[in-house]
Image (tube, rainbow, N blue to C red; front, side, top):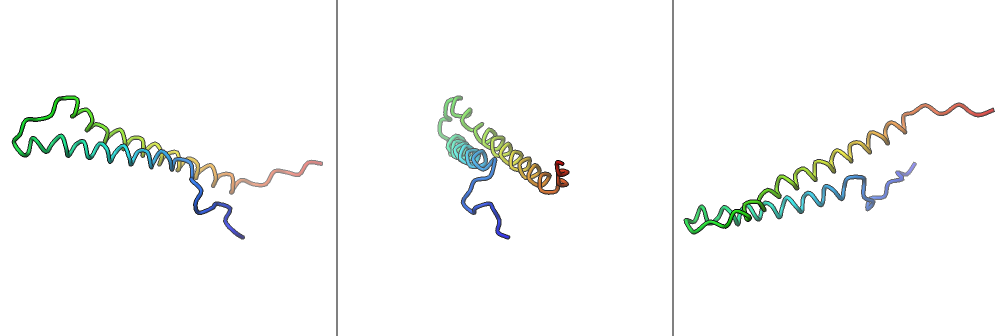
Length: 90
């Protein structure tokens, strides 16, 4: 019996995980750019640049929500597959 899930189909939560990874990467780059002047001894960036560093945490939370959504979908699918068959109507 062939698996009905295609290899290129997106599971629930995949988009959230990808979006979270992108936001996390942007936050990581912002963190490196913000911390570099502090390590090099130059003038630090304004405060709003440090706020961009918080995107790392936001991206992590978005990706985590995607993982939990994927887990929930997998549980629903497993529960539906293991449910006893409904009695036949007479």
